[in-house]
Image (cartoon, rainbow over all chains, first blue to last red; front, side, top):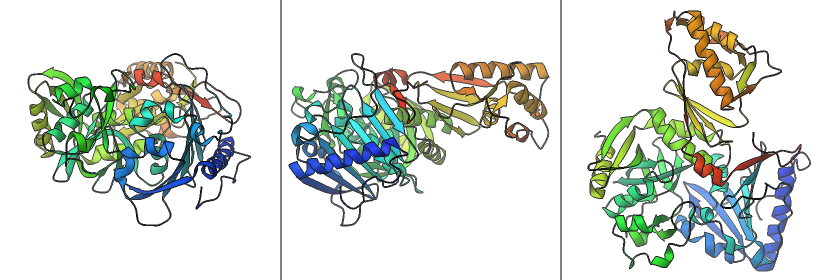
Length: 362
Length: 144
């Protein structure tokens, strides 16, 4: 790792930092063996330095983030270093903490958090994220890229980004974002609420889309939702609903499952050419529910209900306390109106309902 | 009335007050909660540690209602909060004056029963990735 020194300060007092220091040394050895590949990206106005040891992790994790583009030279605001053992031949240091053996289908996490440091170690997948909040650096390690966890493939490095961006007043949120003319709505709710389907419906109908699953919020004012990855996830059922054929997404692409049916991860540009928008001003929060109605039904809801739709799914999926993220998400809920949207089986009518809410017509 | 002094379980819980309602997220269980009515006033007192009797006395000075109604409302809420592990015993605390601070300066208002709602729709996801807290003192330490 270049640009900042190793995590030596307070190592004795903070076992998380001590582990992080050993992990950083292992990353340097991996880079010396397999070669370093550095990427300078921009996320929500911040310089993100990604350092890969070797090509395997770079090829797997970079494509959804590549749209973040090249940033003019300068010291990164946040830096994440990534390596795996299988392709570099370098082992990670032994974990000081091990969660219990996973039950089938589960992925228990050991989480260590101190004022300066957070270490997340997953028993099922072996993924390790270690973050130094003071230096705004993180390391992500996997034993073998072949065992890339589905949730990591869907939202690369999200835990590290969540923790590091929070130090820069940027907030990861579990939400889609769609809009018209630069003004957009956050589409919020837990998995299965219809968030992705509604977001993709809007994009296919000619609106723009920044995300179907995760955004980075800058509270402004005005609040802005920034795209993180340029990909969307869909099941074959969703593709059928949206009339996305096998010529656009081949059957074998539905190959990974986080929960429920297998999903395909597809560049939004392929699904809805010209509709990807990297940033949208947020003028509304929309909480959809799959209701199977003949016509969609929108209702203004309180800021508390809007926060309730946005915050739990965000914080619980980020696997860290996020004590400072909740006030930020609440600030957004106070700043813009929130709506519930009981979805119709009529996809076009749902899109019309979203455009009306963007116009403040509830 | 229980004499146990309780405080917010801030190791596992994050919370935010918005439009007079408290949204509480328990990161150890994946459940989240809404507190309304007079529950936000009680929750505010719990930040510094408070007994049910102290909380009830503070509410009696603030709200127009007979002490028994207020007392039973506080007891019921304390029970639900403790059962959900949103509060823990504050063994060493002596309170911090929050109870007194909760007294209204401009006269009593109508008492609203403390309302407590629990939501468990995120638990499926949470159970896929259960979290076990570790600490410098010893590990692994299951989240409580």
